Amino acid sequence: MQINIKAIKETPGSRIEVNETLGELPGINLGGDVLVKSPFAVKASITNTGSCYLLQGQIEVLLELSCHRCLRTFTKLLTVPLFEEFFPEKNSRQREKHQQQHPDTRAVQDDQDEWLAEKSTITGDVIDLTATYRDHVMLGLPMKVLCREDCPGLCPVCGAVKAEGSCRCRAEGNGDPRLAVLRDLLASASEAPEPDPEREK
Image (cartoon, rainbow, N blue to C red; front, side, top):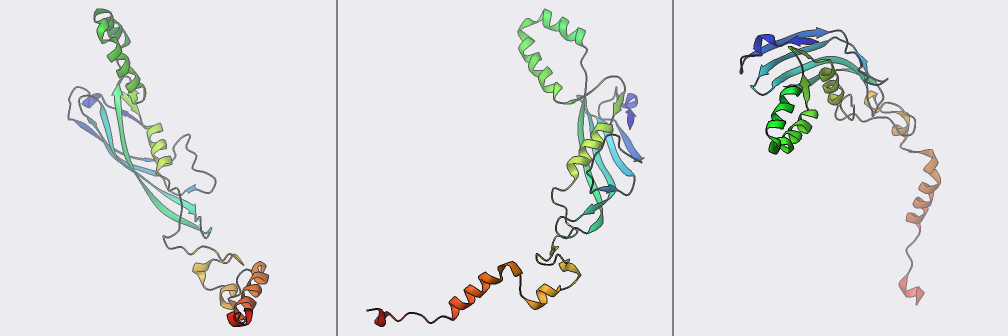
């Protein structure tokens, strides 16, 4: 997961193609209800933009997930877009020398340093993409996992999977037995005769 950028380091606009298959991503934690069923397939490129090295592409992996509505397991091909900028780490000695010669630029330089601290920086000719891959896959996981968009879920009474056919509760149409008393009260109220306004006078 380490890419050598020496071939494009001196030529802005040049790029390196990245095509690799990874059996695992060290440190990744997808949760107990997510299983990785295939290697991680990466298809991307790294471009020297002149100011940074731009990673663009995608990573694919087959996952086994548990539906949040019906709780059934299913497989899904997760395709995650990759986009990351890697900035060369500035030489600290050159920076200090420049600030000594031009003290009026120190505030601007401090702002640039703070901005770079929030970016991915590299030293030398190698970019380690392990953390980038891991973070993008984690962020690419859906917040709500559904086996299909219109999954009807489970029967609230017996817990049967609605997608597998009508359960006994739905066939009988009785609903939740805990609400039987309330249903009887509503039924008796609807059957009661309406009060006669003339008699009340």
